Every structure is written in structure tokens, then in C-alpha cells.
Length: 487
Image 1 (cartoon, rainbow, N blue to C red):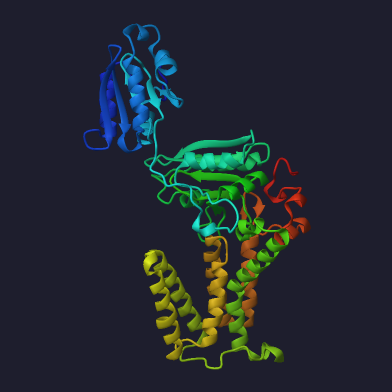
Image 2: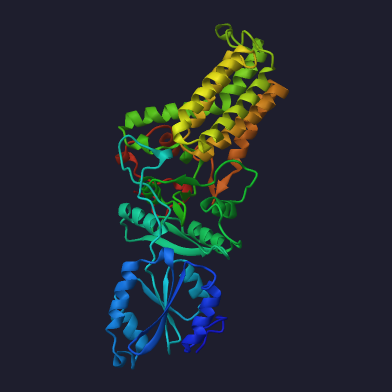
């Protein structure tokens, strides 16, 4: 019985199937689409596969086994004989929808068309070009694992299962994009993660209607969470399997996209973006100290420049012991304009560093430090104090573990500086209030972005400020609604 939902069902006439697949796959137009006409056991067959994805050894071994076929082997139930006896491969499937088979072949599977069968055999012999698991540049640690996620979905799933051997770990496969047919998956521990969050994510992915995912995981984030005018990230990105595993044990849901080494962790709060694996690779006291320094750096990157500008332009607000604050020589350009120009300059240097080969990185640093920084002070464009405080703020941005969060904090710093320059003390205070209100209004799947600060939770707030010893962390974060709150 033919499924009415299938527009192009597989025919028992092999020539009809071959003609459709050749046309849909563009065999005559694309050099990397392989079509082989074969005959085994006196039965005409054909193979369709993408050259770059084919695992030559596996396909050659399958053909050797098929050479042993005799006509009587395919008389009674040829489909069963082929899939269960004569094709020695683990990942084997069948499909009766030619459109779906075209998608599977383009995704890397080999399609075996057999005359007389109304189904086509799919053998997953694909192998993607992939680099080895290396430590991510943005999440390096002194002690600990040096492996990281790669651009292959299957490899990333294996790296996750290596650390999470829980029998209820679920890795659900999905395909998104009308043209790209991008592979992705949702990973979670079934008896810990909130099923409502899993269902919402799954439904959101199913509703995505677009040609493809040009930016991979970032495109997925924009489709699921929206908030396009809000600079703050709604998910945490990580390339470390140990970091992802620790979040899975807490009850988070993970989204992996094929082609991207970054894994999305959700739901997250503001404080999740300030954590780093290095804190948990050291003793609790050392980890707490490192976290304190990191928090100080982050707050300095946001509030230090506007606060210094406020004091520098309003000396009456300063107590006598801080009377030295403020530039002795303001230079030829207003102070707030100096800050704006310096912010633009640092952003230009960051972009230049990304596009500069590593062999020229030292030269770029010399140009930035000597020709730009020193000469700008000498000619009076910048005052020395402006350069000093801007450097402190820049270091604080670079010390932020989450790259997305550091960019958002940098934008807030500029807006807060402009508000302070225009409205003075009132602008500084109102800007901070609006900043806190922005973060307070944000939620990721009913998880408040500022939890446990707002709404306040003493135990959660203590875990945020201090790196608690692992044996004392007996409960999972309640903000993400885990089914099993106790560890």
C-alpha cells in the first residue's frame, strides 16, 4: 500500500528510480555525485553516493560480499536477504520515498537501488572531512582535558557520551532547512531535564522555516529566542565536552549543530556566562579567588570608564582622598570623544587581529602600542589617564569567559558613557537602573536571567559568588526546574 503523503514513491522498476535520482541529484552536472550500474545474483542494481562522503573501504567490502550472491539467494525475500544477511554493515536502513532518499544521499549516505524492490537500501558509510579534537582557544585550562568539539555531529555526540554514560541521556536527531538540510540534535538527561523545556525547544526547531543555516548554531539561537535588539546572549556557547557534561548533569538542554564546534547550552543565566572551567580545576579557595578577580574585571569593564568620566568632570563629587582623579592635561579633544575614539580603535584592532596571520601578530601589536598609543598621547589626541582606564576596561572585557557577553558588556559601557556625558550624575544612575531592568526582564524558558540575584536566592547567590566544593553542592539549580533537584 502506497503512502499517500509520499509524492514520489519508489517504483519496482529500477530504471524509473535511476532516472529520477539522476535528475534530482544532478549526476550529469555534478562531478562529485557517483552513479554505478551493477549486477549481482543476476539482478540489476545501482549505487548513488557523494564522492567526498563515501568511505571507500566499506563500499568495496560491501561489493565483495554482494559478488557472492547467487540467483536463488534473492528469490524469496530479496530485501530481507540483502539487509539482514548479505550486506555486512551496522548502519543500514530502507526508505520508499525518493525525495527523502535524495536528501539522505546528499547528506552522505549510499543508496543501493535494486530491481524489483519498492524500497531503496540506505547504507550510512559516510565519513566527513574532520580535524582532531583539540583544546578550544577560547576555553583553555592549565589542568584538565585538552579535547574539544569538532565540526562533525556524530563525533560531538560521542565526545558527550564519553563523559555522560547515564542510560537516560537522550540525543534526539532533527533536520532543519529546506535547502541546507542541516543536521542537529538535542541532548538532555531525561530524568533530570525539565520536559517542558525540551518540548519547547523541539517545537521551536520544528517551526523553523528557512532555506538553510548559514551561521549554524547562531542562526538557531535567533530563531528560537528572538530578542534581536537585545545584545545579551540567551544561550551559553562552549566547545569543551567536560563543560557541557557538567551542565547536562545540572538539568540543562544542549543543542548541537553539524558543522559547528560550538555547542549551545540552555537555559542559562547571566552568571553562567561568567564561569570558567579553570575555577573547577583548582582548589575551592583558589577557584573562589579566581572567580572574584574575574567578577571585578567584568564590573570594571562596564562601569569604570563612565564612573571615571563622571568624577573627572564633576570634581565636587570626589572626597579629598580621591582628589587626584581626573586628567592633568585634558588634551585637544573632549574626554568623552577620546573614549569613543579609543573604543572604535580597540574594536578596529580586534578585527585586524582576527584577519591577521599569526606570523604578523607581533608586528600588529607594535603598531598598536607605539605608533597609535604613544604618538596619540604625544600629539595631544589622548590623555594618559584615558589610555590607562580604557586599557583596564579592555582587559576586563578580554577576561570575560563568554565572548558574546563581553561584546554585549562593551556596548552597554559605551551607552552608559554617552548617557553620563550628556546628563551627568543622573544619566549615570538612570543608565545603571535601565541596565539592571534590561537584565531583569530577560527570561530563557521561564528561567530569570539574573537569578539568583533577582529573584533572590541565598543558597544560589552563595554558589555564584563563591566556588563551592563539589561534595557540598548537593542540589541542582532550581531556576532551570530539574525533575530531580538533588544530586
